[in-house]
Image 1 (cartoon, rainbow, N blue to C red):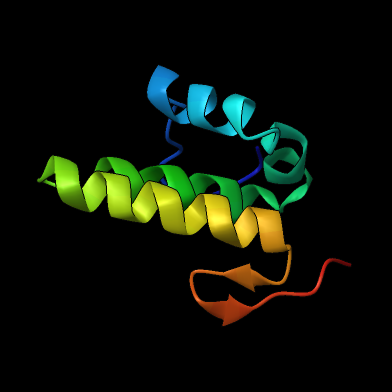
Image 2 (cartoon, rainbow, N blue to C red; image 1 turned 45 degrees about the vertical axis):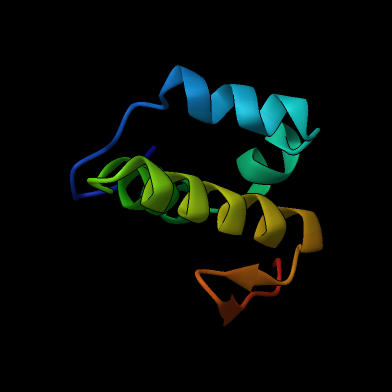
Length: 76
């Protein structure tokens, strides 16, 4: 990654969820900043319910391929 901000390490639960859903390649195809933002956003949640909600949102966005943090996304 070539980011100038804090870079987050992918937690095991995060990678497992991506692998179970067959979305690891879709995740890795996203720009570095999006990968990093998803990890930080999900892991900063204080409550488990919030973490799960955010994780599920990311998985749905990756599966659909056209959203990033509820914003329109079009791969280059």
